[in-house]
Structure formats: C-alpha cells, structure tokens
Image (cartoon, one colour):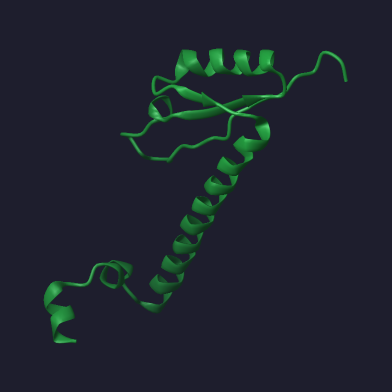
Length: 105
C-alpha cells in the first residue's frame, strides 16, 4: 500500500505511579521505514523527558511481551486477593510475615 506508514511504541506505564509518569519513562520507538522512525522519535521526543531508544518494529515487540507478562502477574494477584478476601484470609498477613512469627517456626 502506498502512502501508509507504521510507527510503533509499546506502552510502558504503571497506572497510579506518580513518580514514574509517562513523561519520565524511557520509551522504545520504531517505524517501518527510517523516515517513519524519525517522525515517531520526534513526536515522543517532544513529550517524553526521559528520552527514547530507536529500534526495529520487530525488536520492539519484545517489550510488549514483557508488558503483557507484568499485566498478567498483576491480574493474577488481584484475583487471588478476591479469593482470599472471600475466604477471610488477609493478603497483608500472607505477604509480610513478622520476624518473631518466622523465628517461632
């Protein structure tokens, strides 16, 4: 197809994280042509203070896999918390044992 170009940047934000906002996270940008990559880099460069690193679109896909794995882990723990709450189990107690409780074991 003529006149159609693809720029790509896998999102890497942490919702609710006030320290590592989208402007402060190093972005991976890519494009299907060198000119597209340059355009995408300029757009992100205007908004992202942390900077960016340019890669091929196929290499940027690895970042999407990492992001997906993180999202799956978060969703899994959220589901466990719902189950534990239903069972009356405190997730805070499970994840942060006290030192004296460990020594009693």
